[in-house]
Length: 78
Figure 1: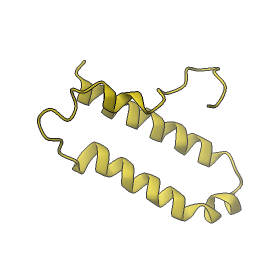
Figure 2 (figure 1 turned 135 degrees about the vertical axis):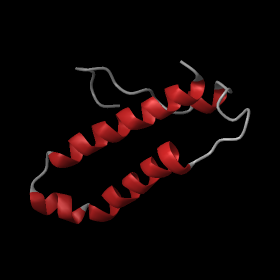
Figure 3 (figure 1 turned 60 degrees about the horizontal axis):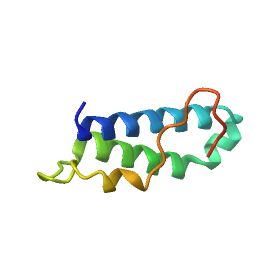
Figure 4 (figure 1 turned 30 degrees about the horizontal axis):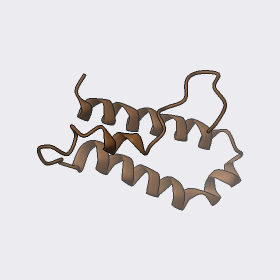
């Protein structure tokens, strides 16, 4: 799997985890977090659908090193 697909897959998994976490609180808490939810959704859509990387942007390992990988099932929050 190339670096761009790894990045997109990681972004998608992180967004899915975020949505799961946001659905756990009661309706009032979700309403209070609406602005944050919108920002996360917009960032996700930009990174996975709208962003066009330039040649050489997705093949550098250092660009992935600063961000933690998606936690494994049963692993505590980071």
